[in-house]
Length: 399
Ligand SMILES: Cc1ncc(COP(=O)(O)O)c(C=O)c1O
Image (cartoon, rainbow, N blue to C red; front, side, top):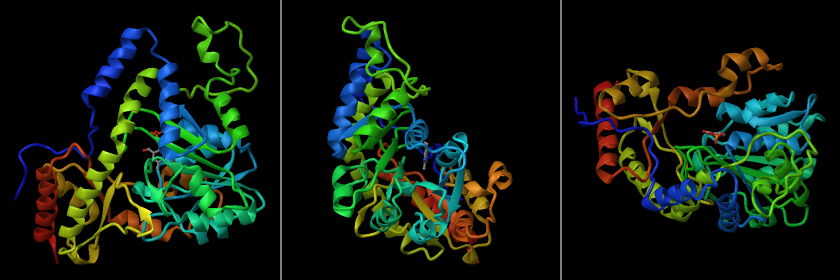
């Protein structure tokens, strides 16, 4: 067996000296929660994406919860979400007492627009596409459906900060303008800066939208429903008085997180380039391994490879996906699986009220997938180690 000497973790952040200095600056300044650095990060992010409003939150999950709340999602409503996602995209629908309607994905792991349309009922309140692994969903088809049925779109862009569709950034004003120039469609996009993401603030997220009313509402919901700029109440320009106008959440980002984010954002395009270069190396090598299928990359989108997900051709192997992961671990390569389809989790098996028989593609993909390590902190030698390990496992376990 060929094994590398040290364990290669599945994911690791790239934190530079600028991030460290900025965090230390916040710690020394005496202002460690929401403040000037969050403001700066929000405006830098809005400029990077090309969005009118950017609202920093303490996680993508909080952002999705806040977005759905601002849209008025409530008991009796339905929200359409792909089953091939992280549980939190769906949990937030349940938190609001609404019904998540789970739909299937296609070969590219992204939600099938036809499945969305087939799931629409008079109770549908919103559509939540998930840009899986950093490749945009078929947004033309999804916005067309949204316009036709008058439904808002809440995009789970946890994996997609910097991702492009038709050369427009996910979450940008120009994407909506490009795809739905006349009709207008309400779009809220939520990004994640969790530790493994293409850029990180440890924990954190950002909401973008073009809608002024929704932006105001979401900002209130982010900090207890307290009137605007309540965060300033401990500064010399602030006032002790505030009004609570809705029962909001505690979803605000801290300046310590924003200190990281400001510098991670500046490095994001470089991070993406490295991910894409490594993904190309993986693609080129796996092209010679008939036991491994590489991820589908559409030519009208810029895949930013938050994840590099291979599919095993199980009919060509004597081991299953779990055993393949164990064999990689024995060779000191960390991996992961994204995702266990939501409808297969015990809570959702009991909770969902409709037949779960239309989700077969997600189930089929789930049995085949492995997410390989792919991050800028890896060296090319690490990438080669992953390739060597996968090739070796295939060699000893092919039929
Ligand atoms: C698709 C998807 N949505 C939402 C989330 C939640 O992000 P966060 O951890 O920032 O709440 C994740 C996190 O991994 C995710 O993968």
